Length: 101
Image (cartoon, rainbow, N blue to C red; front, side, top):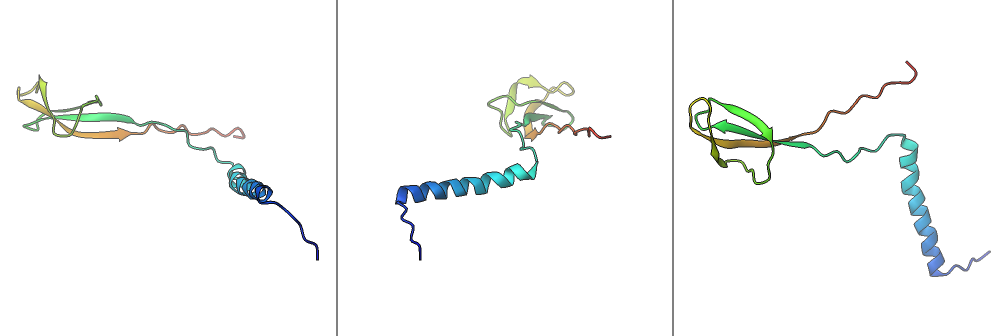
């Protein structure tokens, strides 16, 4: 029977290399592109308290749902406007064109 004498430091390095290979190879073989860190666009939906007018604009820091907009009035009836909702929209992905078609 052959006994190998390996110190603890060498054993840890070998295990680390094996773990690194085990995590990298499946990603390389999948052939899929990783998703890019795409930030969504954030929008604020503004509505009249009488619900006869609404609009959407880009989010402004400080916006929150239910906030009464003091500096603006409804263009239809002159009543107060408030923030009805805040939502995000991710940009559409571009479809890849095949080189072979």
